[in-house]
Image (cartoon, rainbow, N blue to C red; front, side, top):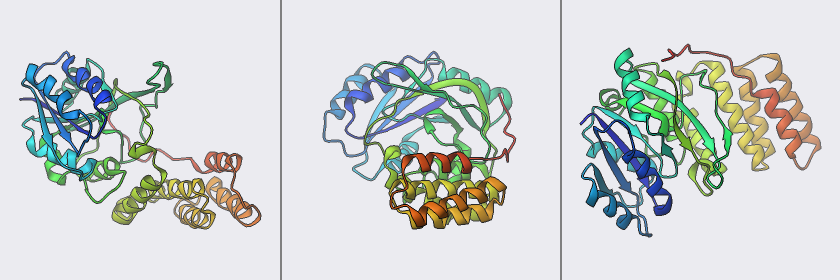
Length: 302
């Protein structure tokens, strides 16, 4: 068994079917699919059984209600592949994903591959965005595009189950302590924004970012840490907590003392004091001022 793909899922049986089909339709065939049900109350079990009855490479396990990180870790423990791929239950892998990622990994010897992806509207298929491949720091999110050698993943101990969100980002930083990930110049996955997902919950994301900085800030380049503190500040402004927003902007400006970041902090001070509502326009201005992240790591491109 060369590739193990792990899908954590909960109460998304309709979306899950599409994700499973995207693995079944891979051009590379030496894979197993580990589906970990995190306490579903819909017909997820029946959907998975329909697939596993036809294809023995598809395996279904229950991991009752412990969260996505625990579900992924459980899936890893049940897998047998030399390489591990992940897929969220509301995303899909393009047919060439495994073939192209395995080729890239074997050609270069890199044990952590981060590929391209697109964000599309599920209803009409229209392209929302195709993020630039070039990543600037040590971390990389969206595990639906990851491809990792088992040995590297086992060194880290897997996902931190204490994180309510940002578990993928946190793990990527720990992976980077052993190997700088390689950028794979190929779009392999489609990400579909889904309502009520962990990644769209500002409070969960905020908690995850704060935990990330508590745990790993001291290991980051100061300018990378400054960017994360800036994103925490923006989360607080979205929640209309202007004082905490300003507090984290100050930390960010101290770590990254460039002119624009200093100006962003001064700009925020004015509106924190004189405005009861930090409105959308002011947030957009602040984001443009502060969202400047220099290239800190030169990742190999495949």
